[in-house]
Amino acid sequence: MKERIIIGVCVVTVAFGAWQLFSSDLVSGGTVESGVRIVNLETGHGFMIEIGEGFKGWPVKTPDTGKMTGYPAEACYWDQCGQKQGGNWVVLNRTLGKDGETVCPECGHRVVGHNPLPPGTYVNKDGYLQQRKGQPQPAVGDRGADDRNGRH
Ligand SMILES: [Zn+2]
View (cartoon, helix red, strand yellow):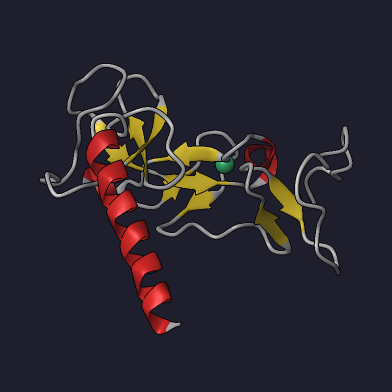
C-alpha cells in the first residue's frame, strides 16, 4: 500500500506545482490567504502579498499604485483596533529606519515585531479578534452584535 501513498503525494506535488505556475501572475497583489502583510505608505492601504524568489528587499511595489512604497506591517489588535477585521496594520519605525518605539496611530498601543495579541484573545480564521473562553469557540458566524466589553 506504500506505493499508493507515494503516487498520491506525487500527484499532489504536481498539481501544486501547476497551480503555482498558473497562479503566479495572480497572486502578486490582491487578497491571498497566506503571505506577507504590507502597507502602502503613500495611500495607507494594506495588502497581503506573496514574497517570492524575485524579492530584493524592502520596500516593494504596491498593488494599488505600482510604486515602491510597500513596507511590511504588524497587526495591532488592541482596544478599538481589535474590532477591525485583521486589526490595524502598522509599519514599525525600525522598518523605516526611524528611532524610537512604534505606537499604533489608532489606539496608541505599542507595536513591536510579531506584535502580540491582547491577553486571553485569539484571531479567528475570518480575521476577527475573539475573546478566549474556557472552551473551543464555534468556528464562524458567531460574532454577536456587541458582546465585547470594550476596553478594560
Ligand atoms: Zn492599535
